[in-house]
Image (tube, rainbow, N blue to C red; front, side, top):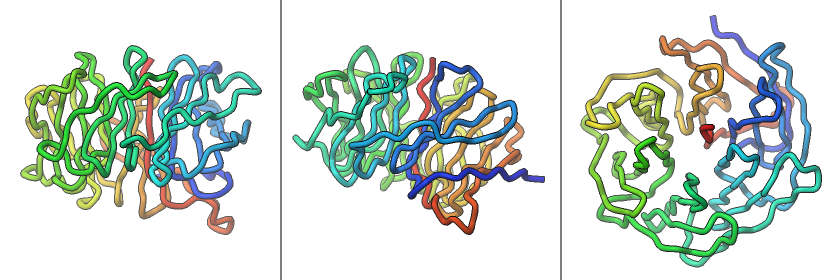
Length: 286
């Protein structure tokens, strides 16, 4: 039986972040007003700990092991940065604004370079992670059609979900195209989130087929269906070993174990109506 836990926050959650914390049994979640609710793995309680200002229409959250947050705003074409979430006075600043960025979504950080998926320009854009200075871009419509989720592999290979052409492609960090990892021949339709597992397999949310598909990240071999979720968008691997998947149509976060059976769902209190349309979920590995 699926257990249901209830979490009360304010406004619509459209981003969720699984991150490191100074308390090792906490993961942290962020909503549109950026109140943070912490889930204690011991007793499943939730509480708001902090409200962050100066965030406008966030769509994706990237947490780093050092305690900083990067937040992309799809509608505002901006990326915000909180240098240290653990400092009580740390506020969000606008790190990147416009300048060719159009519909920022997924992000990864490597060696002080921030890689941002630019949905409307079909490219991955590189920025200095602390100054916001634009470095260069790669991809283009030859390879990408509305990129969304991105993930960085241990071999410094960047995997990108290309939403409208039903592909997951890979690049090296210099921007060289390395090939197609997944396409519509496997049933992939509307890929949004990508997640590398510890065994080297790649999970991809297939939005319009209501499932999560599994691939060999090196060869691209299709390894089958990992799980079923209504209109899945983002996914992340929690510290408990479970896979967390956001469901856009049911306003829930579905938790899957390695046997692909749902072990829990996180729901809003229906009468409150405060959490709607979950989208991205991100996790920065330690």
